Figure (cartoon, rainbow, N blue to C red):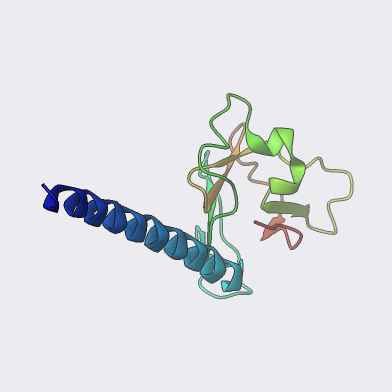
Length: 142
């Protein structure tokens, strides 16, 4: 009879060690993420060189993949895109070429495909007669 309480106590100790281990793991993961710099890993479609242009046609999206999560899991599944609710979470900056002062930028929408991948989709087909630059918002934080 004396062995039963020891077994129960041993199981409780193992559960406590497991819980403490998971807490340490979670804290370690958070510390690791805080040291990982937020930066774009890839932007698609990709240019052949940093100064070359990419032609966008039809409704082809522009996608950026970041080095770490930017939004909370499930944050963009509320029915209203998170970028509409919080403009600071828009990872894209769209700038028209300087010689196009009187042209309106194409309308687009942004959605987060995952916590670290964002996608820019034109609301209509990309115009074929304008030049613009799509870059990553330098103010974006995670």
